[in-house]
Image 1 (cartoon, helix red, strand yellow):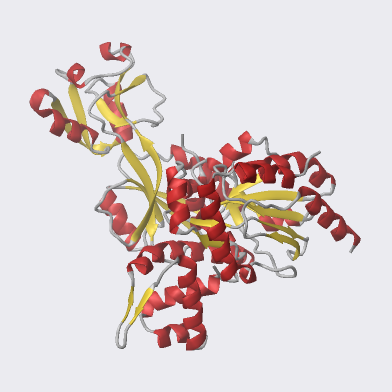
Image 2: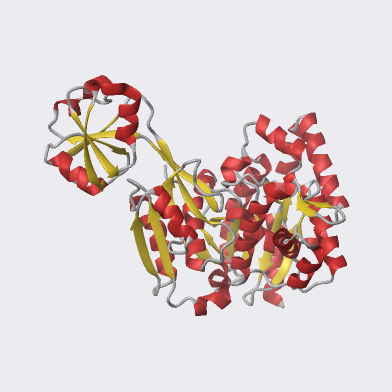
Length: 289
Length: 214
């Protein structure tokens, strides 16, 4: 497979017109057609329906398109390093963090990127998954770590990074802290804090287990939730791996399984700076275990 | 000391008939498509990629080659027995490469911490870099899509490349080793469509020696 073949195919996806795709790529139409044929042989089937008045992607073409887009972006980054090193003096890396997604797990990846670019400005933005998706589409964010949801817009590429279990957070001296694992029945009579930006662990538990649990709502994110647990206002349900550094205990919840998968998402097909591309690659290459 | 080729041949002899048939068909198909014409030739400029290292850093190939010849080898992954033998042979040959002032980097499409796992298992002192989405591999012309038959065979043996690569494109590199000089030019190359044959470390050493005398 060659970079030019992939580039021609992507131009064709965009235009659905052989003549215009050839113009964009600055090659003759027969050369473009030959390259597409070679790519089709390579990928094991037709990518394009060629009908008289209609050029359309086949199922295989549609399936391969996002992969080929990602691949050509990575290949172009590999070929363009020397150029961009000079043009990225004021680069930004704008990272969205979904509900109860901590920056602790990605901190070392950020360090690897800033070591290569001392001028880079890293910016975090917390928000709901929907608002972060909107910010990415509007180019106010480069990428975001969010819980995997089926309703993420199709224009966002997403890659799973890690899974995390649901933990019950309680004061270290609480009677339940003596237990290794906490069952739903242990929580009867306790107050569960329901934060609006804390992941929806408590809501989902109350939904699953009915009315035997008491909830207390508040607007805030996980650091405030931890403060409230420390002050014995109630217990919290949060993902594992949050750094607390206070007199708090984290105990896994036995059932139901409220675990979630965190993905990294970014807009498909948008040109990105090397800092952004390298950050996403580092996250995908890393082990979060 | 037995050569890597001997170990690979022994491994090949153990191969089940079904696996052999699938891989022979795959190699035949690549050969029919003139795949080798697309691979970066001797004399071409090697891309100055920046890739994630096994430990979570960023490694710039241009910085490595500035201080001595750079050996870049593409491998499929730790799941592949031929790659495992190759990584062991490279780890054993590493002192020789270092004595010649060369840097060795091994490139894999694997993600999710698998590069680190490979590095630990094979006691590799050289860098193992993740070519996420096969971008460097594409720029070098070494990437192909695994055919359906081979894909289902891998799945049956528990190797899910979609999971390992973090995308379900099922792209793999052919085994390829490049020796790149300080100016970033490919000075020697080993390429094979047959993933059961690899560059012999002694041949890489000879290429490094030839580089010094020119």
